[in-house]
Image (cartoon, rainbow, N blue to C red; front, side, top):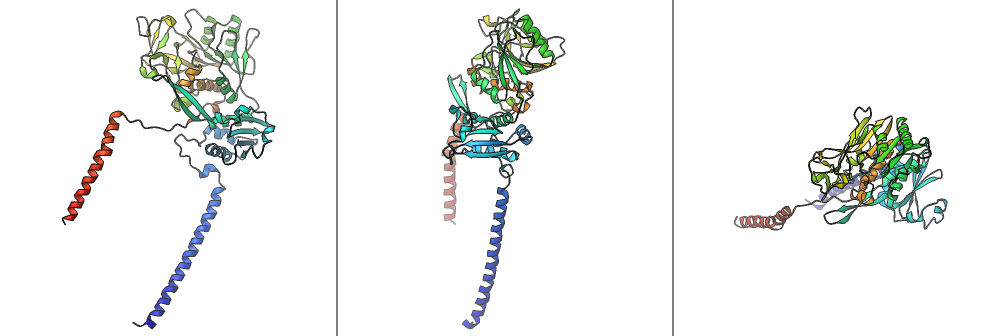
Length: 480
């Protein structure tokens, strides 16, 4: 075939290629334009519609309680993130954007104190809490500082096998931010009165701070000169009294409960014939104490070597559900059995119960051994109760459960239990279920025998097997 005959075929071929290339270029341009437009549309959507929370503990997901509170806002709230530009905490930023996506009344602003040095002049804040990545929640001049240490909470627990403290970090962002939003947009906050005058234990600073963070105020209360509990009381807290109530105080508290009042009670061991007036108050709510100090016979339901430090089973109730769902333990040192008064009309829910292996030492604090002896009564026993009979009574029979070391041992679960009870009484159920989320990485613990087996398998047997297979294939191919 001549060159003259080949040239027209080449032109036709190149022409087809140029046409095909043009269509390909046009298609590519169209795809790029579609991608740009789609990206612009997606960028305009809220983060809740464009981001999926794949974290193990759902750090960025908001609870139904938060969604309900935020979606019902009727006033503007601004969340100011205090951070130097470029040093914003990504987890906190994502969480704040989730709040903003729930309501048009919430907006998020980042404030760099280096660029806006006068911004904080308008706020009366504790300088000791002004860490980077703290958040100021502001609504029409009413504000609350949510410190970085409030968002990332480090807790301590005792390892009794080594007598050393273990530390764990929880992300408490949703709890403190939702409570702060609720605080700055609410006019009336529940008020807790703490009874005094009977040798009661003083609440720790940690507990009082948590009460304030949960949007409750508290004040000391002496009933010696009062005819009634103040009308603005959402609850009366009686924390481990060492002396009995007076007759008049007893009548005031019974009347208060019968008329819809609320009492949270923590007690130390009550000997037979003691605290008769206090027990009149509890009997009006359908519950009283039985004799003996509880010893837990099930080693999985108490601290190692401390059978009188009980880890009771947690029943389902508004007060306890959030803690049970979070896998928390409650620790009750030196607890006493609580029992129902015969013939009561009260609605009683046993919140905390020992195992069937528990027994009550009838010698009480005079016991010389924790072993079960003749006369000791068998369990199970109840050590926490919620009773409703006109008003509400929540009673825990362990005076030391709010002790800082005890509370640290169970990651703050005991103090959270108290807060849940107060929130339940103050009709703040939305604060009950919002608790911190652990940021500790899950680890795989492999027993020693399994470790040795898999080490030999992965390092010795499998490589040798692969080499043998390779040699076999090589020899077989060579002899073909």
